Length: 76
Image 1: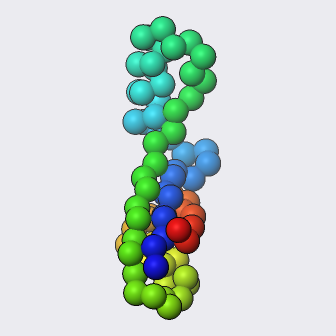
Image 2: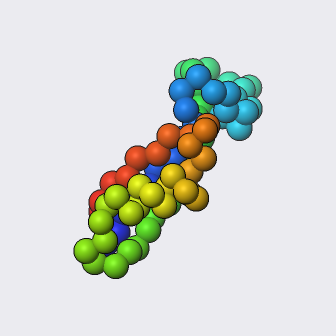
């Protein structure tokens, strides 16, 4: 089985990398860019029959920082 984990900063927290990239894009003339948000995507291959709750547990315990990040899990 394959899962895609998408990780992003929680709403309202600063994203220095996104802010810097947004400024750079506007400096390059891309004035239509209002904001940029960075995140991560992780693809996990797990044994067939693995409970999706186990993937959530992996995210909570290691892959995402639950204090500052949100995550979503999608079966592929």
